Length: 213
Image: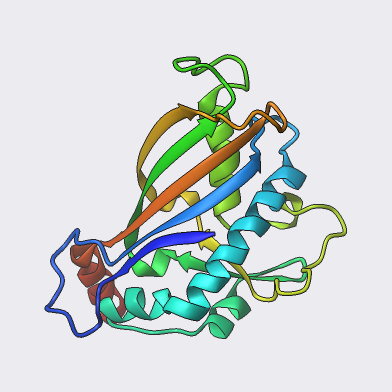
């Protein structure tokens, strides 16, 4: 489920540095285990699939890349992006890419089955659970970060992800709250993930100058 979308109109006055271009929320409900040395590849991919369905709807109905790219002076379609990001039979479309010279702020309402204040006990240390989430929000680095012998399911070609790399996240805010649903697994969470995309116009200008050099 995707909610609360805000897009700056293309014909709006010129943007100021640091002004948000895209604001939206993603929803995730399900298991969120702590990161482990074994990689949690299967679990991360299930979350990635859930996020993909929302971002595909976002792309098809709101054209976010058009807003983000035209605000910075260039446009590129999903098929062209997917051709650039091929991994083990998957073709990924990251909404935010390094070429955008943009940063991403993430504001998460983290609802889990724990008493208030129990940050590092019960369902696992929140930092490590968030590491699992952030890995699922970006495209895999290589085939080892995809389930063995997996291939895109129906509706997953191309496969939409939020980020080319999680280093593009520059601001993180997390609010925890008890999950009051009595049924379900102890490790399940309900997340409302607020995403704000903020291009850096100064950095973009520097990039254009370097390309023209």
